[in-house]
Length: 85
Image (cartoon, rainbow, N blue to C red; front, side, top):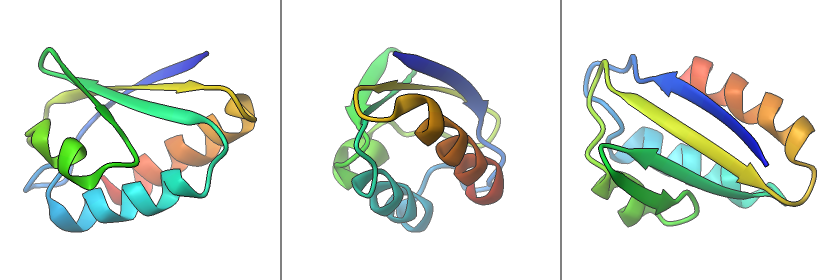
C-alpha cells in the first residue's frame, strides 16, 4: 500500500470540475484509490463520493493506493494533485 497526504490549494476546494478530473485519472489506473478526509473515506472512482468529502481549500486529504502498479501510479497521482488541486 502506498499513502500520501496533500493539502488542497484550489480556492473552492475539491469541487465538481477537479473531482471529475480526479475520477477520470483514477479510472485509468490499476490501483484501487481511497481518499480520506475529515473522518470520512471515499472511493476515488466515484465522483459523488469524492465531492461528498466536502474538502475545502487548506484542508488535508490522505490518498491510499493499493494493488496494481501502486508505486509508479503514486508518482503520477501526486503530480496530478500538485497540478490540479
